[in-house]
Image 1 (cartoon, protein in one colour):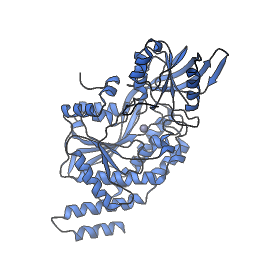
Image 2 (tube, helix red, strand yellow):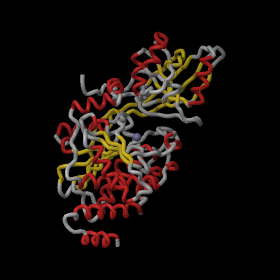
Image 3 (cartoon, protein in one colour):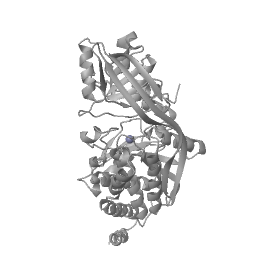
Amino acid sequence: MRLLSWSMLLCICQQPTVDVCAQSARERAFDAAASASERGYEWLAWSSAHIGHRLTGSNQGRRAELLADSLFRASDLDTVFFEPFEAQAWSRGTVALTIGDAQGYLHVPCVALANTPLSCTTEAPIVDAGNGLPEDLDRLGSAVKGATLLVNLGLVAAAEGTTNLHRSEKAALALEHGAGAILFVNQVVGGVVLTGTASIDGSLIPIPAACLSIEDGTHLRERLAQGEALTARLTMRNNSDMVTARNVIGELRGTEHPDEIILVGGHLDSWDLATGATDNGLGSFSILDLARLMASMPFRPQRTVRFVLFMGEEQGLLGSTALAERYRDNGTLEHIGCMINLDMSGNPQGFGVCGPAGWRAVIQDACDRIRRIDTAAFEGRTSEEVWLHSDHEPFLLRGVPVIYPLSDLGKHIYGCYHSSCDDIHLVEPSAMTNNVRFVGALLYELAAASRLPGHFSQEDLKARLISEGLEQSLRIGGVWPWE
Ligand SMILES: [Zn+2]
C-alpha cells in the first residue's frame, strides 16, 4: 500500500523537479514505516531483561556485541562486520568508605569511579574543594597535598559564566595538586550515586576516586564548615584486564556516491550499575532499528551510510578512538563526509552541528525539509554548540564534521545518568521511534545533497575549539592536537 502511493508520487513528478519529488516521496515512505515501528524499544527491553548491562570486556558486553551483530544481519544490510580493538578494560570490585571524627567511625555508601586503582587504601583528612576547578585548588594551596578532596561533580554556587570540567579533568587537576583521594558529590537528590571514568585517556589513575550521594556529601560538608576535623578511609579493589572488544558495523552502499560515507554511530556499551537503558540504549538500539528500516525500503541512499555501534565509550572513548585512528591510517577518514552521534538521544527536535563554514546551512535546510513531514513532533532547531567526551570527539579532533540530535529528555532521565536507576522504565518508546524517523530523514537528506561541505582545516578546527573554550579541557586530557 505504502509502496503503491510512493510509486504513484514518483510518476506524477515531472522533470526537472523529479529528483526533489522522488526524494520527498522516499522520505515520506520511510517516515510512514518508521512511525509504525517500536522495534528499537522492544529490542532494548529484551536486552535489558536478558543481558542486563553492557560493560565493555564483561560477558554481558560480549553478548550485546553478538546481539547487535545478529540484528544487523537479520536486516537486509549490504555488509555487516566487527571491528575488533584491544583495550585495557576496568571493572569494579569492592569499595568501602569510613569517615572518622573525634568520636568514632561512620560507614558511608559510595561507588568507585572507573579507572581507579586495582588495590589501595588511603586515610587522610577531608578537605572541601568546592567545585574542584583550578581556582578552588589554588585557593586551598598546600592543604590539598595528601588530602581527601570533597568535590562537586556539577557546579554549585559558581560565579556566572564559570565553565565546569569533566570529572576526569577534575581528577587530573586534583592529582596534579597532590591530592591523596577524591570524593565526588553527586547532584541528584534521593541517594543516587554515579559512576564513570575518572581517567582522561582510559589508563588507571594512581589515587582512588569515589562518588557519594548529595545527601551524604552535604552532611560531610556541613560538618567541615563547623570546624570538625574529619578523615576518610577509602579502600578499593578493582580489576583491569586486556580485552578484545568489538565495534559492530553495518552498511548500506550508496547508489551514486558509494565512496562517500556518512557515519551514524552511538555507543552500545554501558556502565554496570544498571542496564544503561538511556545511556546509551536509547541511541544504540535506535540505530539498530534505523538500519533495519532503511534496508527494508525499496530504494537505497545515494551516499553510503555506515552504522557503527561503538564499545568502550564509557571507559574512555576506546572503540571510537580505535576506529578513527584506523580510518586515518588506512585513508578511510577522508571518505567520511560527517559523523552523526546518538548518545542519550531521544525525540530529537533538531540537530547540532560542528563543522566548517557551510555545514550549519546544510543542516538548517535539512531540518526545514524534515519539518514538512511533521511540524508537530519536530521543531527543526539547529545549534553549533561543541561538546566533548562522547564518540564523535575522536572524529572531530581529526577534522571530521560532527552532527548530533538535539534532545531534551527531562530531569528524571538525566538524574539517572551513569547511575543505578538508568533502567528501561525511563525509556519512552516514542522517543526512540522519533530518533529513527528524524535521524533517518536527515540521513536521506545528507545522502541526496549534490555536495557536502568538507572537513575542518587544522587552522579552522583549532580556532573553533579555542573559541568554544575547549582548549583547557583538551589540554588537561592530553588530546589537544597542537603544541
Ligand atoms: Zn553515553
